[in-house]
Length: 549
Image (cartoon, rainbow, N blue to C red):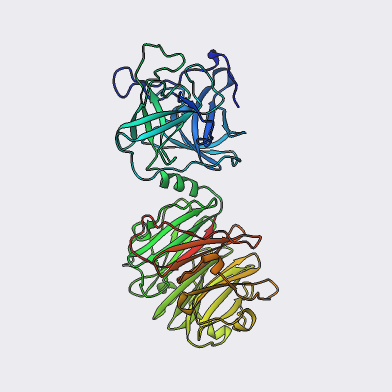
């Protein structure tokens, strides 16, 4: 922890007036005087020191993920009221979170308020990140708590978190006006960037500037306890978007509803963002075919390739680039051959190529898009792997660099492999003899983790779900019932993906929920969680999950 140092070592960060004559202006770090946080309720509050030791400025922040914190831009500028450039800090920065000490690798400032998101040089340990509020600005009269490492009435550089009680007096689109609940509750020098939380403990704002009544070094004649805090209750999606744009494993989920197609992201720590309308970003395709699993996605480096069967039955393709921009949807049939009676689509990347398997007229077809963007013509897989009858469901995956495909016919799953080097397909193999007998299969998903192929199925009209593994030597495990993982659900559609050495599985249930779980490398399953489809309109029907960097 930081120890007290001479007053000359700390400079004011230039708080300025905004609520009236004499209120301190923006640009200065301000610690909540009041009560020490002995219970650890605000342990996500961090201490920040900016600049060389002789002239260092102190402020506060709040950890919102293991490697990410929110704080004020005021902390990083010596000139009050000026913004901060994105990128590496211009001065040395020390962050104390719990018992660990870190530096800041990169700054991501907001343009519209005194807030920035900072990426630490590594993940902080031993500290549970804060939860951001997302219910809108607190109403006037709402009780709040401010926390920070700034000055108190008697300490110039406290080495512990202090808190103070506040009440909301008004709000704008970007700021909250708050007032100390009683004498002794104030925001002081060094508290800028510290969290302001509601009664549930969620962070609604960050301390920005204050009158500092009762703070050490402030004249006793100053009695005003008013302060201004920058709102963060509406920044949850922005935080997710900034984090998702950084290199590193994440999964994207594309949910087909009865009203459209939406995409959301799940970060490595399990954080989900809201869902966005794909057609609003990549262009309208007149809706998605409602009667089928009409969407597939494949991560290729930092890009995500999206396939969708539109309402007119055409297969469309678009790319969500790593920077978040989209290409327009193109007509795959125009370059790979038109397929009539399209029913389903599945896709996966192998190396720099995109492989697409489509179900049309109860037959399985395959095409690939090379690194230059050129498509091969659709080929009937039955011509290479042999006929298997009328197919009702299909899924494909990359396993050990080869294309594995599972097709369902007569209610039973069959499996084939396309060798990437030769382009040859193995004959269809009836999986039932190796993995066990179930009721009729209604939905199937496959994903490759290393040289293992993981297959997930829903049977008996979705009321039962099973999982099996085919190892690199070609041996299958018997079906494992997923009731101990999913609970009692009816799965209308299942999807699976490899993400950072683990298997992620998701399902759309008959009661309109999306469920997600992960099978870890040690073969244990994470608890199943419902996915909040914030931003998605309509009832979900199908989905596709893909892993990407």
